[in-house]
Amino acid sequence: MSRVVRALRGATTVDADTPEQIEERIAALLRRMFERNDIRHDDLISIIFTATPDINSAFPAAAARAFGLGDVPLLCAQELDIHGGEPRCLRVLIHLNTERGREGLHHIYLEGAKGLRDDLPE
Image (cartoon, rainbow, N blue to C red; front, side, top):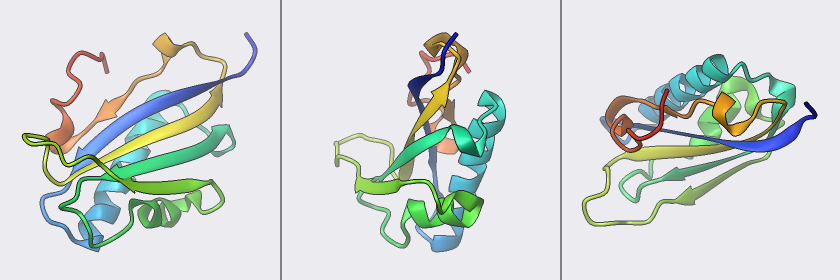
């Protein structure tokens, strides 16, 4: 099979809006996504992060740079402020080159975000 562009989703939450907790949780999420999906650095195209409006102490992309992804195009945006949405939530969308089909990718949801997409198998 030839390599194609796929997108991989993930999310986590923080207990407190601090730069340290954001860096810790983003690193844990990225590590789990990379390990579970056997992602290599050269597979990466770009990564988009969103944060709920109650997170404003640090950019999730800064945590990704500290994780070693400084040469990957990174973008941060604010998540929609939806009534009843998961608070203090960080989401990620990774674009990557892969030979796997959609069914071969495993989306990762950690901490308080585990219930966001319980319809997806891990």
